[in-house]
Image 1 (cartoon, helix red, strand yellow):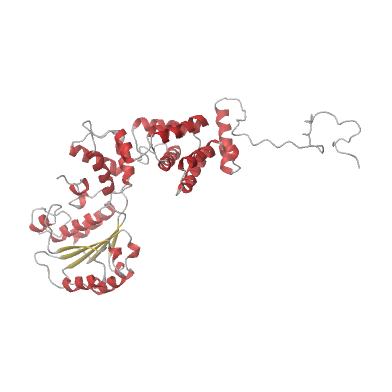
Image 2 (cartoon, helix red, strand yellow; image 1 turned 30 degrees about the vertical axis):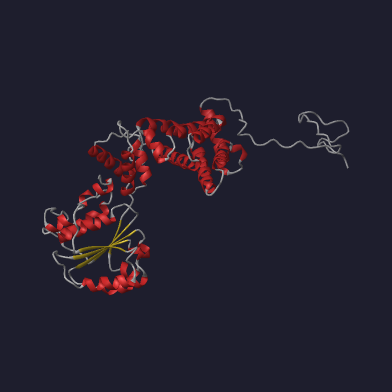
Length: 434
């Protein structure tokens, strides 16, 4: 039976932990210098390496060559604490979600005073530490404050603010972070090469975005795609359909339609989104991400080289053209409209209808009296002047015409030539004399 990728490629040393150098380098230096603390708190989003780093720290502390940042991997302690090892009696992992009560804390406190059986330290790795009750933390307080010299604590949590303050103040706190796309993409490319699976280049940005910066979530998504891959590997079309993301061609069509002010093309794209079975909310979310990328491209011309934007070369070229056609005011206003529309879509029973209304707001700045709409209309006029087009007011830019004024008889007042002289017997202002 094949292991899941996130288990198969779990890091074994601090050098293999990606994207957390701000944590692994100080810990490695502390192991080299021997300035070790008795309690550590690892916090951060899920799937970023907290529990893996806790296990690595336990191996580093109990290695026969240690404490060392590079466990030897051959001694009895290292082999028992390896990813496929049987575990060590002196390294106790506790899931606080099911063992966070005061009775569990008292049991831990009683057993902690027994010396380790085979290792240098007795290490307690307490996962999901925020689930420990206040009474449980209070029962542990004295032990965490003044433990025996052979006892070490490693707390791991996604919500450090829920850890009792008196416990937190007695630990060395290391915050983990989400892994940036520039680090995740080459990492998963390396894994696919090691697995011998062919993956289209356009698939990697989808996997990284679906993982949301979590290494475990990203590898789970990649594992799912590899499991369903055909003889030719993981194709872009298969990844789009499996992950539920919007085909990039539909996003391109919508951006081109907005840039051209082409309502027919925009609503045709929405119809294709519905026919393809895409979720209207997901389409709006992907469109908002595209607007974000275009705004970044306008402000940072070398955003691709800096890793702010990722994607295949042909897609990045198309996005560059879109960023030049869509002005800053248009992109800013459209992004605001889509963001507000996503909020309105929560719980709605007609998401396609709301998507069509969102599109109408983006295409018709003349129907909006906000400052953003005015700036978008001015931007359109500047673009026409820059391209040498005649300065004619478009129908969607023009303000609504005033309603005709009725005469006392109920008939519309006749249009007057403002340049003609006043009628005989009337003053120059056109009104009746007193």
